[in-house]
Amino acid sequence: MNSNTIFNISNDADFEALTFQTFKHQFENNSTYRSFCDLLYKHPSDIKRIEDIPFLPIEFFKSHEIVSNKNTIQETFTSSGTTGSTPSKHHVTDLLLYEKSYLKGFTHFYGNVEEYVILALLPNYLERTGSSLTYMVNDLIKRSKQEESGFYLHDLKGLSEKLIQLDQQGKKVLLIGVSFALLDLTETSQFNLKHTTIMETGGMKGRRKEMIRTELHQLLCEGFGVAEIHSEYGMTELLSQGYSKGNGIFETPPWMKLYTRDPEDALTLQLNGKSGGINVIDLANRNSCSFIATQDLGKVYTNGTFEIIGRFDHSDIRGCNLMVF
Image 1: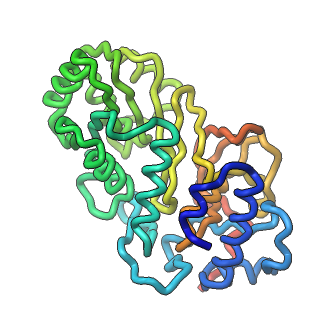
Image 2: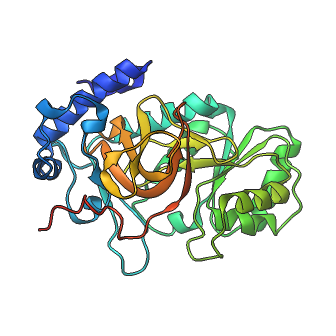
């Protein structure tokens, strides 16, 4: 299968056909995933529905090399994690596929990146190497071809002045940042932005007290003078992103879908609309693993939109921790 085929998906039948092809490819070429499927007695001949496909616990990216071909690893993205914890490692053998995925995903939801001035407030990501988010945003900044686009690390005053100036000029601006840094920014100035989209990527990273999404978004709306706060849903182990344009309801590009698993039976998918563990199919992950059981807790609705409502603790994935080496 040509990797670019996933970007031509136009309906559920296309998605299902490519999902089965991807499963067969990864079963045959990914030794870790093959071992996991073998322990569950799942073979391609047993897979009749998407619900039959095993979802690999995301923790395996911390302990195993998850690759589905023998090509040279071009980049290894790592999670930030907490001090002393083992980071996830996503070995990417085709950076061009990642670039196509996030660029086409951005275009799908927001249009041509060249129409935006992109300002990035991602201090905790810039202070380390191996961030897939930094890689994506840096590339989007370059592709925007706007001289004002760029990263801001600790210069909140300079960013504040730039935001107000650009907004007054009527420039179309996207400010993407981590939650704690965006809150810090609102305390530097009084904003009343008319042409600026604020996008949070989540995470207080220990810098501020954690808060629920509605509280966070209310504070950010008041601080920036905007009606809605946008959000990005992505992670080290994925090569695609979901986006929310408000109210915490996310959508995915056509080559990515989410499901929920039963909190009491990690191997069983459940009906839409019920809270459960989030499972992701990301067909852009063709060269690693496209079927991932995350530690996020959420709801998926019948129209394919979803919301994230929390996280499991490490004890989740019971029933999935079958491989001990």
